Length: 319
Image 1 (cartoon, rainbow, N blue to C red):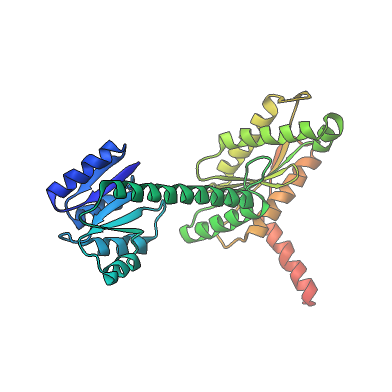
Image 2: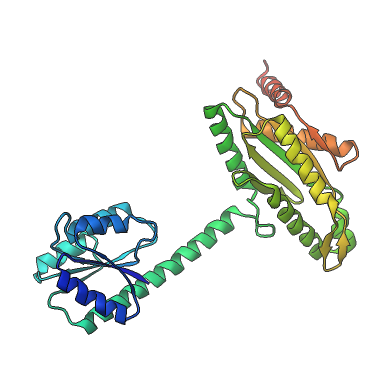
């Protein structure tokens, strides 16, 4: 574990550094508060820091305060080292954000114990972060395929459409439906069906750009969000998905199962388009692809869907 020593006195700094090397720590040193602050802003921020209270540039208390104001992750455990030993000094240091407080002259074994306590706190925090990220992933991802779930892919689409309006760029949307998937479950069982869904998702992800998004819309349906894609680019991506999924049968515990997919695509126009209209346009194109024999790509028009929607709203209002 990396640990920072911020100490302006060279002799004291070397003594602490020698102890830390002996105990197996990777040490980085700073000769004043400003240098320590730069280290604490680096990409590889030390997880533990021993800060002298009195330093040129920026003292240890101010350093603690600035670190806590930023509230960055991962957490850095801060130990103040000082000759001040009054109760008010302790309160000042801890209120500034220090995790522990050690007075000079210090006992080396006491310092080692304080560092062990700091490591335990850091380990606990890492466990909490891991658990939090797991819960976050569970809330936003489909557990079977690992793709974004229904709610999250729609949020992503809405966000990308808003970005497209600001920047004047189109957004492509593709709805895909695995052909005759019910027959896969009926003939081979749900375990085989799950294998088909997982493999289909993996193949699709291999085609996505880093800023594209793929979600499981529901059942055997997928929704793909393609920022800055016009009709031609969206059509090319849809055809690549269709070709890749149908090229090789999927290996399952029940044997190799051929898979094809029908796709409907739509692209946002120059005006303002909401996520619901774009999804409906892609969905209508998907149904057209299925009605024409499946295993094909069709395009839908956003303006047509919007016109139908406006007409329906006006009808409900009696206009």
